[in-house]
Image 1 (cartoon, rainbow, N blue to C red):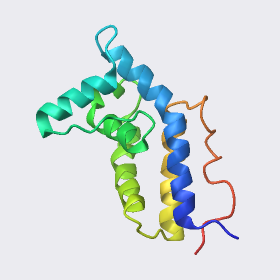
Image 2: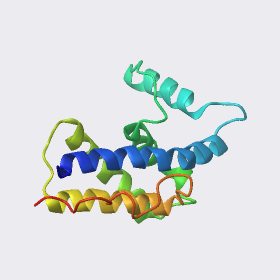
Image 3: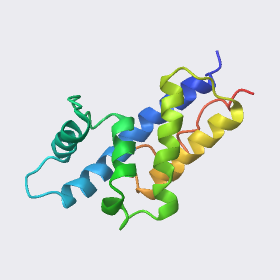
Image 4: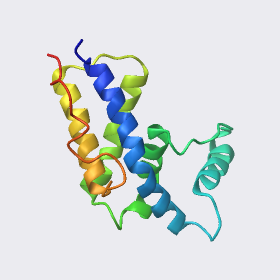
Length: 141
C-alpha cells in the first residue's frame, strides 16, 4: 500500500524533530545563564505572558519550530533570514497536518523540501540526512 501524502508529512515532522533538537538545544543553552534549562525559561515566560501552564516537550517539532521563530536573535548567528523563515512556514504546515487537512502532491513536496532545507541549514548530522525525508514512494497526485 502506498504511503499517503499526509503520512509522508507526518513522518517528515518526526524526522525534523530528531534532527532539529540537538541544534536548538546547543544554541538555546549557549544563550541561557549557566545551568538554566531553556525549556523551563520559555515555559516560565509563556506562563507569565499567556497564562499557559503546558509543559514544553523538547521533542515536539511544534515547540522546536516555535522557538526558532520566536528566538530569532539566538539563531541569527547561525541561520540566514531565509533559513529562519522556514520555521513559520513549517509551523503553518504542521498545524494543517495536526488538524487533519489533506496535502496535495505539490504541498507535500513543498513541506518535505522545506524540512530538508532546514535540516541541512542546521547541519543535522546526528539526525536524518537531508534527502532521506522524501524517501519512499513519490507524493500521490
